Length: 397
Image (cartoon, rainbow, N blue to C red):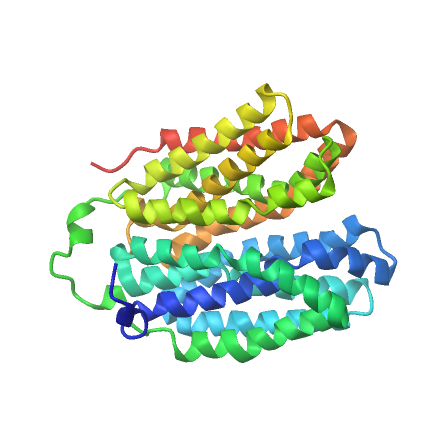
């Protein structure tokens, strides 16, 4: 790890800047809908599922934009692309607070979807890849440590703002934070270094990985399919898991307490990866993480349901998600190399965001038409597919 001064001066400043802006971006764009959408639906006289469809449309559009955003970061740098993402996000949030009808409401979510494609983890990873090249694994891991606190900060802050100034006021506050803090930090504080433009003289990272797999063909399909299959899991469970636990018989207070285990479990797993697994190939990190998640589903299916079983599952799920977030940035970097890394992340992130968009709708439909147990089995099946994909990938010699 670099010295504390390195996080203020030199390339590692990017991790400090992005650590703060990722908390702002996730907290303003991604996490609030679980609290705000029911209020939006009530104000407009819509059903909650229809109101949530706007969020899904935004994620879908973000998936379509992801590869172009990544290519733009390769060409121009995160200090050009990510400020635009923050400003677009601010405009989308203002539009969401103002939207008087269906067309303007969905237009606002489409704008927010574009902003998410240019503001969340994939563009941040692409920015770090452009700055650090093949040595970006440690910066990516440290960045996810900071980002892991986004939900911990966002949900209480959003609830406080809703109670104080309403959901519209909350979104206006978040718009001001994106435009007034995130955009200037991206534009003026992100380093301009480009690892591809600086000759390297046999760095450790280069010696560790001299051969890369071409970023196309069967290997690339497996990587993209593995992460896209996994995307179904956190997206579906974030919308339904706590409600399913409640329908299984847990009290609301117990459900909330179990939900609070998720964030710390993510951060704990990322600390362990940074401290003890730095020499382990990122592909094995992905395999172990998804295997842990599959084991959690098996535990949930075989043991009689109770609060302790639900809590153990929440911890296992949180740890798996914490590791998979790191793997999303480091597996492509290690397998395919740092050249064109931004566009590569966009190509992988596109299917990820599309699956993420449809997952809550699919799980809700299955749980309503069949049962919660079958819905969880469906989510477990997507996790199993992800594990198979990661197991089939072969590392370069």
